[in-house]
Image 1 (cartoon, helix red, strand yellow):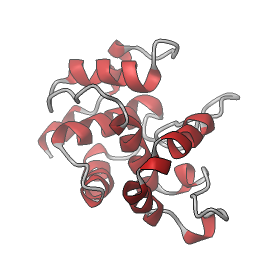
Image 2 (cartoon, helix red, strand yellow):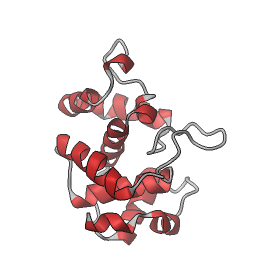
Image 3 (cartoon, one colour):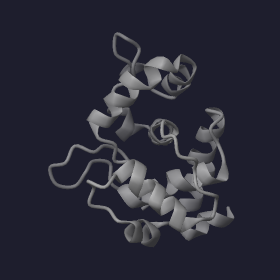
Length: 162
């Protein structure tokens, strides 16, 4: 498992700042999502599931974000694309979904964009209950197996002071 403070300070925070999408709440939500979804160690969903990377994003969700959100937000799409390896761009200059596995900054960016397209405001920084509910409502959804209690148990509390 990755060190939560290092992941936050060296990957999540700089990536969110580069995208001009940083806030303490956004940072905590993304890190919490990583620890809930992959325990910050799995790069592919265990079993036969399709979820990819430390954010465990499904390919269908990835495609939906590009087709129905980033396609209409060219500036943001360009910023996210700049994080990808040029070797993994398709003919339309869209990053291949395998970037979710091989590129931590790209995965963080896609996680933040996933939340950005939701209308509800982010909970306040440090509100672990609120972050857990936000994750459940907007990332895992009512159909997912994850629970608010599980998110709270997996949340790396040490990032609240880094």
